[in-house]
Length: 465
Image 1 (tube, rainbow, N blue to C red):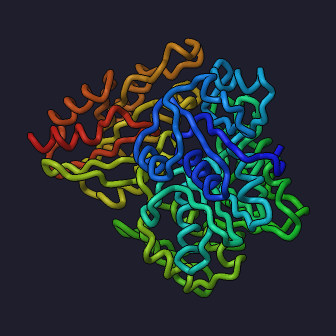
Image 2: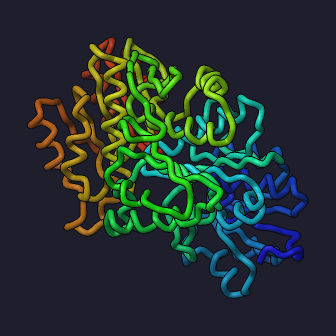
Image 3: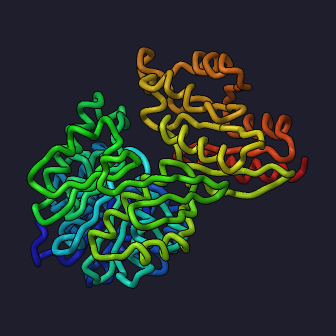
């Protein structure tokens, strides 16, 4: 498939950060590159325009009339898409983005893959910055935008490739997890929980795909796993490669202890060295321990790692303060799993110990729209003072027996003594918050989507209050 005969490459679904970055990198390698997408938003629209890559608006068989040598089909593309159908009809060469990355960018490099249900983006960003700060110039692909970098992906000539390894499936024609393609020399697994209810039947199915990932670590590599995670514990008992455990428990090889949480930073120790991290929360301590374990394995010293920690600026959409208006602080967070919401609110409570914290949640992911976490979701708001939940997105697509029950969710939250409201959309939520929030309050919006520009609307309306 990846022969020297390939000269031209078309990207179906080019608008995503990873697809656009890979398209630009293929252009830099000398390939003729085109692409198509329904809509290409900023910043990738300007990025592709600057690269002078021809992007066709919408999907159409005519976009493939030139019969490109290879078509890269994005994860969001499904059967029925005219370009996918044309590729199959005419037997064109095609592959997933993950397969393209493996063959053109990762093979032959030292691949560090960060996996796990929670903390992948933060850990990958922090690890990448540790390498970058210390002059190692890594290639990287991150499912977010680290504030230390201008983009979420970069491809260099160095020996290092650091990548966020997602367990979600690869493409409509490849139902394996994406991380199966990434050739890990070092595999980091932060934690393991049930998620992605649309593709995994249960926790056992999630464990199975992670066990397949672990099998790929070579004997001269390293498996770094969270030794405190009950679901992950049995998967770490392998003999085909070296294994190190990280965590807060005393039996971990990379152990963090003497934790001291400040409002904006955390201190913790490992044997013989004290670290300072400009992030808060226990989850971020474990993320940092994973980075320390990987970086030290690759030859970096504690001092080099701490120097990078000192200058790490975080990630967009991870506890990102969007602004303050009318004395109210508005925060954006990507959290959409009950554990992520719970840990984020714990961290917020450390930072805003006495302020009233509002949690605004959009049940948008394929898991939280279902009732698999009905009880856990209500409990995840423990550290919030008031909760607002938007109408469950695309509820009609889910069978009645599987749907999240919003009425029960409201009843359970209110039973814990909190204010709670279930409102139809972003505009109704903004009106509710503008009416009820007071100066000094903190509003954290949890969503893995755009949520109809709720942050900007909130700041504008609060500023007029």
